[in-house]
Image (cartoon, rainbow, N blue to C red):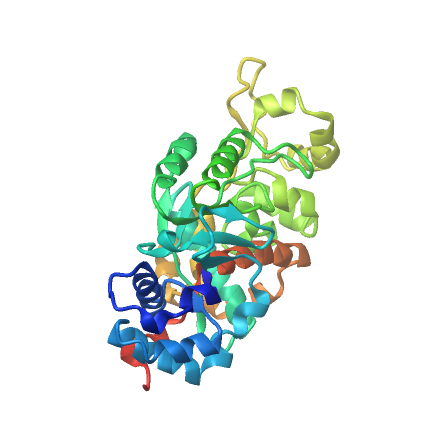
Length: 383
């Protein structure tokens, strides 16, 4: 995360004789976190120049700050796209969220690790980071920046208790939760509401936020037209052929689990507004389970793509891993090489609404997980 050490932390710093003074320890710890690729730590250049001459600070901190001074403009060029950051000051007595930053007491940062990315499943965190790295690679931010998190998961109904547990310590946490919205403007469902309530309470104790997720769930971050290149699931074929640019269907139709029969038996008026035409097309294409009766409400009427295809598609598009593509989609080497070779073409053809959804995800992850790229780690730097 982008962490600003305010000027008051450096006042009369050269007069401190104790290496265990909280200000000395905080500065050492924060720049050590930056060295290790956990955060980007900023201070005015006059403070950085002062640091170089403070012997009570670690030798590595002083040497590293010397490099920052030389590359100052480049290292902090990402500030223009940061919309959420931490402000560290001796004047703050508790965590307090402002419009675009958190006020954080000095004591809070004495032992913080990298930002935790809290998602429902382990694979979700990997997916969101892949997406974000792709987005910011496209923006060509000097090749110096990256996003990095400590991944954590809560598995469905455990979201609230997990957040309460994390709120017990000094942590930085970004949480992502599916909305499970059925259509645009629909109410977010129970898992999201529970997590949102827990995050609001946790903000009184830790720096945390819940990503404003723009679609139903992770699977809806790819449009049907992309899935159709990798799978022949009937619902994907129908949507990609007849509704490739339909935002509501691609963003909110439950393509992962499919549609249960009770949704068809007692549809909401707004649900019918968005999906009646699609359901009619599905019936004409004979992809519906028409053998269901009124007592079969919880059975599947239209099958979805399941949980694995989204992650497999992400591996192809964002990493181009031929071996994994071959294994995931049961392709031969020639087929896997061909589809990986077309990944940039597929990415460039994404509808604008998909690109906007990715922008929301990537912006939030960059705010909370920005750091210096591994290629700039100390062992690889030309000091």
